[in-house]
Image 1: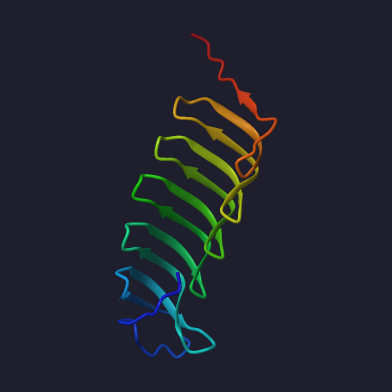
Image 2: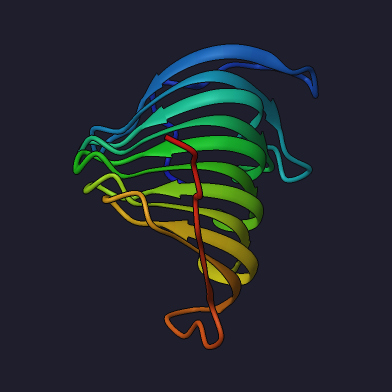
Length: 147
């Protein structure tokens, strides 16, 4: 997400400041920024980035990258809430699909990776180890209720 930050030119002298920027491509950023070692103004701290296509990230930034906890919302209705590293889902998180299906668990490099639970739109849940699109040996969780 590193872009030319025209409209954000200010002298921070290494101090974190709150800014509101509009990028040449139509993206918007509101939040904390600081100067990098090379003198560039970079997103650092808490901020909200809205792309021209309607994707919204709200959360932690470090040296112009999504890093830490945040929420990424898509125009389709899909949403990821959790940990980020180098602009990718990485760590513990929840991905809600446009149809209402939900995956809660571990992510690595933008992929479902590790222990997790997938609940489909009908409410059926499977748990186990996920490896990208492969999830061998999942167990269906039964919800036994007394009527």
